[in-house]
Image (cartoon, rainbow, N blue to C red; front, side, top):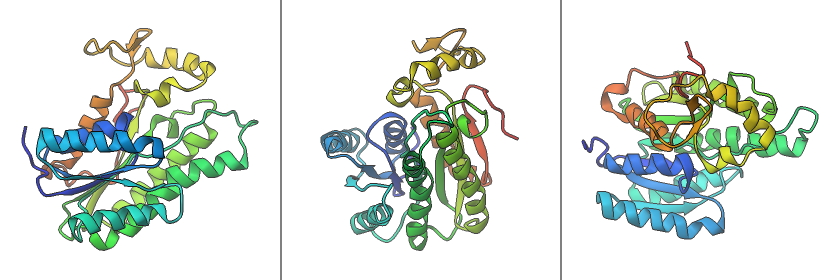
Length: 267
């Protein structure tokens, strides 16, 4: 596989499981130098194991950084550790860390609002803000925000999660204007993927997904079928992110790109 990210420094938030881990593995296979972010003490051993695996498999440099992206100082700490380890440059930022609690409008609380918006919205903003002094000046930078079809499709029980992802999509377009000479910036509209986050949602919400997922193409037999269609895989989402890393993708910016089996078709 082409190592067109050789020498590029990439920060991946929420990098030790699910989609974040899949993206980290894909970037490593393309030669990227990685900063793997995690938050809970229980994740430290897993983060270090993944870092060792990636260094062994792909001969790439990797560090792990514990920093809570939902806090005011966590994003800046992540940038500080990245530049301390790899010098004053950050080429790639993947804003993947997020939280999702399915709650009806009636059951949504101010506390849950804060937890969603601090991590899903404020965290990415503060991380990109802290990274600005270290981003490329030749347009070669890449920022990808992991969003969701919940920002567009109008799922029930998604007031907080869907609203926070819609805010992230709006910031994506603004950043594409403000940082246009330095980075391409896009959102990935992710559909139901076979991860612990999706599987851990309430049964009533998963029941609602059944007829929605039936609209997706079956594709290859991944073993994650539900109804007539199927959930996506981590590798398929990571592959879309990987395409945006390609040097030839630089004219794609400010976009909401679907990795959702056609459940929504952005225009």
